Every structure is written in C-alpha cells, then in structure tokens.
Length: 132
Image (cartoon, rainbow, N blue to C red; front, top):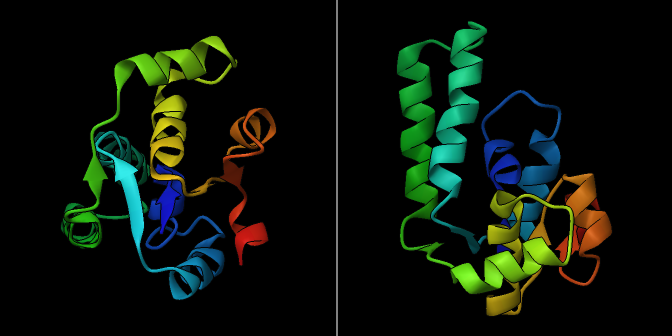
C-alpha cells in the first residue's frame, strides 16, 4: 500500500510525461490510498487540461470517473491536529501535509513528484522513480 498524491494519481491519465512511471508504480503496488482532498485537487487539474483545450468535457468526465473508480474505498479523512503539526514543522502547504499525515498514520510511503515534500519529509515521501 502507498499514499499517492494527486499528481501521481493524475499521471495515470494525463500527458505529463510520467505515465510510464505511474504505470510501473501501479504494477508494483496496486493499492493506492489518499486523503479525500485528492478529488477536488484532481478536478482542478482536469479543469486546467480542459481550459487549455487538451481534453474535451466528455474526456474529462471519463477520466474523472476512472480515477474515482480506482480510489473507491481508498479515500481517508485525516486529523487536522496532525496536519497542522506537519505544517508547523515544515514550509509545505496544508494540502501537502494532508498526504503526509495519511502516510504517517498508515505507516506507508507517500509517493510524490513534489520536490519540497521530498526534501522536507525524506522519511515519509519517496519519488515514484525511486519506488520502482
């Protein structure tokens, strides 16, 4: 089991140059979890692809449906005190710290492309390339 941040989840569907790595992560460990925050973040990413006319609305809706199917029963609430404690001890956003808190609670690594998270939480965060 891994915690996948929103960009790792998005990499399964979006042309961001990381599809192959995301597929390799999925092969190695198909059990991905995330805080419930992943969903609005993912919608925001899809909105960018829509506004840049990379994908049309039917495609965006299909991608969202597939992502939600992948993450069904794998979304978790995180403790605000824990999230804000991670905020206090870092320069990462509260959004990023939600993923860190879940990884800490679950005792599993957070896979992320976010260099700041990787630098500030080396005991919890791993780059997907290092994981595979």
